[in-house]
Image (cartoon, rainbow, N blue to C red; front, top):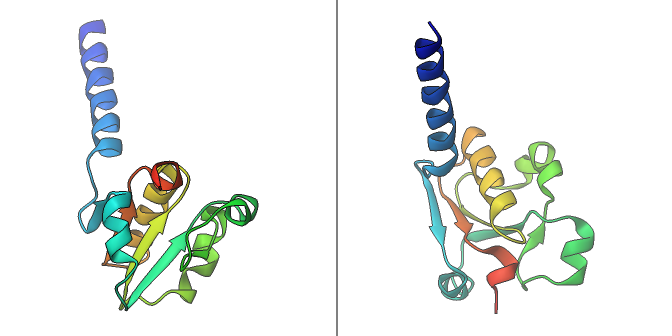
Length: 120
């Protein structure tokens, strides 16, 4: 009985880790180097999901601040017809924001890997 319980627990843990690590279909990940080229393209929405204080301290020109905690309420400010490029400090919050936007019906989402920590 305990062997079955252990096997079920192992499967549950593996599934949980798998769900967290596998990229979500429809969300593109780019480096900060690639972001520099993206910034020159029109028809994209650039969103920084850090807190307002983090954004005030340092941000990339062209990005608008919609903190992650406000995103569910403010997603209607974004067009589902245009690509949404999302950044945060390290890439973790922007990844969560990208998944949230996907659930809200956005189909063209790009997450910036490494976030502002990787921006030079």
